[in-house]
Amino acid sequence: MAADRAEQALVEQWRDILARHARTQCELDRVLHGHGLCASDFEVLDLLAEAGAADGGCAYRVQEISDRVHLSQSALSRLIGRLEKDGLVRRAMCPEDRRGVRVALTAKGRALHGDVRPVQRAVLARMLDGTD
Image (cartoon, rainbow, N blue to C red; front, side):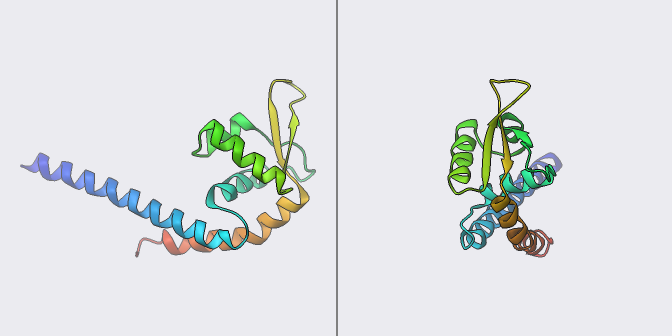
C-alpha cells in the first residue's frame, strides 16, 4: 500500500511538472507573439546571445543548438530559416568543417533579444515562482 502511494505521488509530481511547463510555454508564446516571436524562437536567440559573440561571429553549429533546445533537427532548421528570413540570425559555413553550418545573431537579432529578454524573464519569474 505504501508503494502504491509513493508511486501515485511520483506520478502526480510528474503531471504537475508537465502542467507547469505547458502553462509557462503558453504564456511565453502569448507575450512573445507581440514581438513577432514564439518561445522556441526566443530560446534560440537567447542561446546565441549567451554565446557572447560580440563581434557577430558564428557562435554555434546547428547541431550544438539542437543539443541545447528541445526541437527536432528539421524543426530547428525551419526555425533558423524563419529567423534568418526575418534578419535576426545569419548562417555561415564552418571554417573548420565545411559540412557544418554555424549560426549567429545579427545586429537586429541582438537588439530584439535585448528588448524581449526582460519580458521573457518576467514571465519565467511569475510562472515558476512556485505559487501558481
